[in-house]
Length: 607
Image 1 (tube, rainbow, N blue to C red):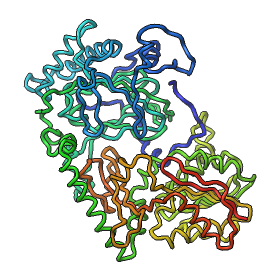
Image 2 (cartoon, helix red, strand yellow; image 1 turned 120 degrees about the vertical axis):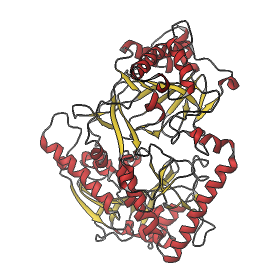
Image 3 (cartoon, one colour; image 1 turned 45 degrees about the vertical axis):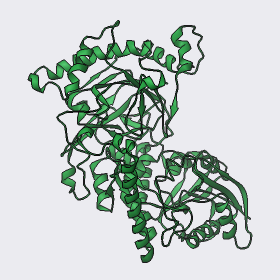
């Protein structure tokens, strides 16, 4: 659970751009940060309650009831993190809570109640500090706050804390939290969070209109002007969000593996565990002063959409109907890839780069197994994560051609490469960068469509095409791209290809939410519109760019700016058949094909 160091990891270029500002150390009104809230010993003890193994991986024998209770913690696995709930379960679909009484659980466990009582006293003190100069009628942001804070003030080790819901989140390095305000109708009073295991940056943002509901694609970039706070949450700290910081400000954790501290130094995140305490609102009705962002005073709320499936279904049906109409119009114009792939990736380039920092394990091994002094082609390189994270360090690649049809992504990839070289040349100690030239690898950047790679045949020892072919609209285009991958390989050269699979692991999260185009004019089985969301908490310029390039406000899940992407999902064996068909004279041997996390993949050799 300690801080993890990994000098081989290179921060994405756009993440570095977003790190220009150091943490300010300032907080929104009503927020309080208490450093060193728990000691190292208390941190270890809390983690031992939550995990069967001790911190650091060593098994420790302990016969106390709390240690034995660790096995009873019911962890749930979400898309990117693990969570556990106590008292009441947090419902991510409604952004509300499920009554703990229904599950036979209402009170917090003893260890959590003791922690909650300490937090409650701190929350009460913080509340009095921020309210001392306010008049009595301005003291509370919501009528339910008065009762909640009265309970906090009366909290002691032998009496209830006032908190009755605890969510434990486990964040692996690189995992973040999307921008949100904790649902007004579900919880009252302050929200308190204790950080264990690692530090991270949390950002607070508030638009000039102070409302996520008032966002409109027609607004100018000036209307997106927002005040913001960037705060480094140190390990073992307590963050209390009360008053305006709780009800009005969006808070989020950026998806990245590095943060900048107050001195300007980059630090890598480790695995972080947060313990978030809330007080459920029995009435489910909030009467706060911030009506513009209050879900009780806006309609419909996420909870209402969930409780009335007809409302959500109608909105989603309208959204999908617009997707189909746009696709059919573009099909008639022969402009599907330009509008729903190229233009979309130009619009989301910075956000895409900010979220892509990992590489498939088999791609890593593919690079490691190349002959020494190889020539490698990365067709559809995106932000070139494979290049800077591994290819230069493997010392197997002498020349790498990075090709992509998106100028914005190529520019970000080149910036990533230049940042690494400059950092290494500066000779800074403990640099988190590695020089691309340290392995004598040369890099060439090519603006090139993967169906027309601007290189002579037989030039490469290896070719990679990761998550690209499924964006090509027709079978003819996909076949042309596969032939190009074979053409540029020398005899004995190897290729690796990944595509999205029709056989999704979690179809209720993917296929059911995506727009099926198989019945649309110009659509084929497996064709879908897969939305990309530039989230509410993203930098203003990212959202403004997305809006300017055709994005629209997501009025179903309220996730931010929604852009359309065309994707053809491959059936099982469809990729293998495509590669075999691409080798007209039988000059390709399939070495391996497999499925991995809703993707199909193949490795082949030119013979």
